[in-house]
Length: 105
Image (tube, rainbow, N blue to C red; front, side, top):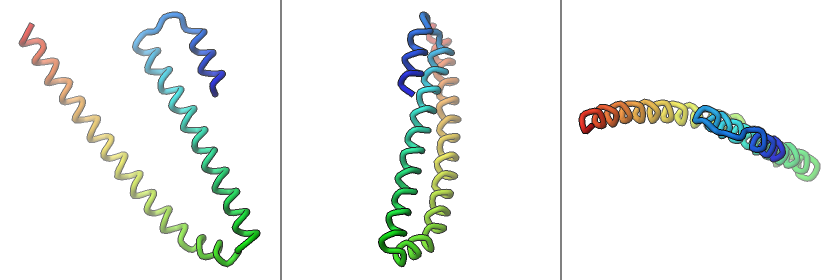
């Protein structure tokens, strides 16, 4: 992951706005995938350890897992909606700022 970032830095001599945006998006996507894999590995390891030591508690945990998944889905839906509303608000604010800058100049 870090090597890819360093390679991109060495490759690109000049940056434009589009290249900067793509570069930042690439870094964010790679970092998020690493974080996802980290937590997935921790989850699988935790399940394996708990099954081997206290399997009764693991079964109770598995019964609660659907509730946690539904709650996570609701949270993701809420955050997605909130992000799109925020994006629209920023878009409207940029339109207003652009109109004001035209009036001032």
